[in-house]
Image (tube, rainbow, N blue to C red; front, side, top):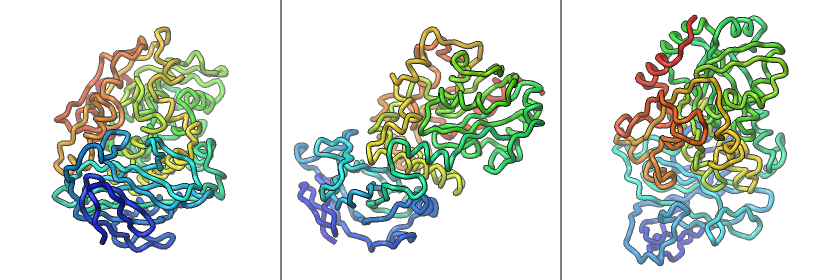
Length: 494
């Protein structure tokens, strides 16, 4: 195994060249895997392998770095990532003009991060056919947990692993990976739907379509709508609500519970809201409260605050109480072209906390975004880009004259891991460097409820979890305090 050179001199590993200024250790190339099989020498989960299969990701090369340690070297000889951390510089063969390329890096603790090719200035490079492609991979020092990285999509490694992945730029069903690719993928895999969402089916995908009798029931009193967040579906967003909680809220609303499933990658929340209205039966008069999560809060705000701008076509919609759970109402710094990779990293590392089938679906959506970023097709990601502060969507939404008779409540969190193993797994330090403010790993804490230019904010009725509570972006639903507060806030009666 060739040694790494902490002076920054190149180390050749098979067809790749690695530079690790400030990092010592040994490098080795693992035996190549054939299509549809695991890479030999590392322990990957079924979730990762299934997502690779469905997204047609093939391993071009797998490299492991053993016995690594940080050495002191002159600052001038180190090269940092865009977030200011020391980097592993990886140069690999270009797969050719008809293939895209990504690198999945996993550290000693089992934390995985995605990487796109960079130019000499450190910016994302979408140029192909130059012979080689270069990657700057952040390498913050990861302390393995006592169980040696049992969490994660690549588990139990105890070493750094770099997987160079390639994918075809033309999908046999969806066409070329370009600006419209995400929308085609969502249409095929995550189509729009208004669905039943009760105690017996809130964790399952397969439910019967709504019938006339369902709409009659939903309009017989105030109903409760659930709206999921990024990369989600209803059964993926709220499965950790206990069955007893769902039964209680089902009884409170007389069984009038339903959910809205929508595009989160390719269409912005205003378009989502119009699509919701368009799916309602003609002449319907609907009175709803809403529980939302993450980006779903923006769809909820569009339904409540931008209702006069929606084309109702004779329908009536009244939005009462809205419970915003970790919603980025002031925007999210992860939603620009470069930092969007970090958003994908968050979801990638949450996969092991979801049921296997749900995790595969979310990871497939994340990889779809990565493919588009790898080819520079940012214009097809309006559903994510709209969350950037100052976007056209937020300029329209967070305006002084935009208000509603609805009543807002909020759950937010400033996350710090309290579990010993999660202290390394969550890589919270990196997220704090990106946000530069309190956050729940995905959205800024204050952005959920604080003043943002809209007269609906700040939200006075709120519960904010602190550093000692251990509640992250997806951790609200299993928390008894959050459940009790939601039941307190929602005023409906059966």
